[in-house]
Length: 309
Image (cartoon, rainbow, N blue to C red):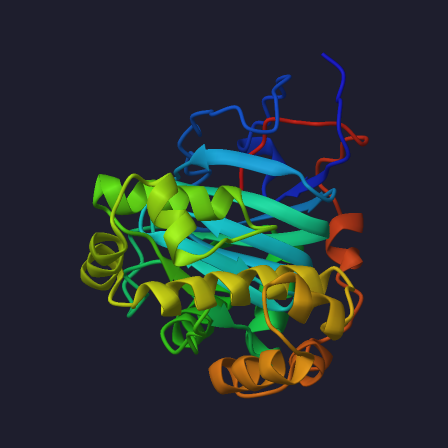
């Protein structure tokens, strides 16, 4: 079957990693096939893909840990534990076995490292959004160029050691939206996520979830550790990051996510992330990451594939 969407792929170790293409809707669920070990000593592999804007990867899981790095565009990662927005030059860590789905904003260049669960090291135990240091960025690029890392190769074994050191000290950034587990609170959270263009008042959300305002606030505090107001603020921040990364002006974004003025929005942004919106995105490392795709061991024309990240 011919490709039917705008995705460009490159794989580390083409001879050992198969690509199965299938026609599917943006929201259709699929099950990811476990990655096979190309050799007994291979403990790190890579995967590169460029997704078009609004591309959706349905919920799936892998049996290897993942570091999913976006050097361009924005990813909205969803798990049962919570949501994360990953702006350019940041990454999300997903432990093995954790089901996750991803929505793309803008053209997104994703470079993923898969790490075997056999690796010993102080790797994060839960999903988290992280800053990518210049050293780690270059390690990701180099690993993508090599394709796979075999611990029995002395040169690559040293590279694996440096990579593990960097992953063990990942600076976590506060871009998580914790997801409630109580079915009643889940209804409210799902309603809000489905109405990002108009989050409504607390009264409106409580009514949509068939809850009293008091019960709504109590459940969110208990389930997420945040007051309902703080949870909505974090949702607004994640939405704002996605809009800003898409090139929207700060003033327009501030008003769209519910702030009365750009200055109030900037104060919140700086309080949460330490810098203003302009400085936050200016700190991204503009570079020639497209080289990673151009090396493509396996290249397909623009087309929707069922490939998951």
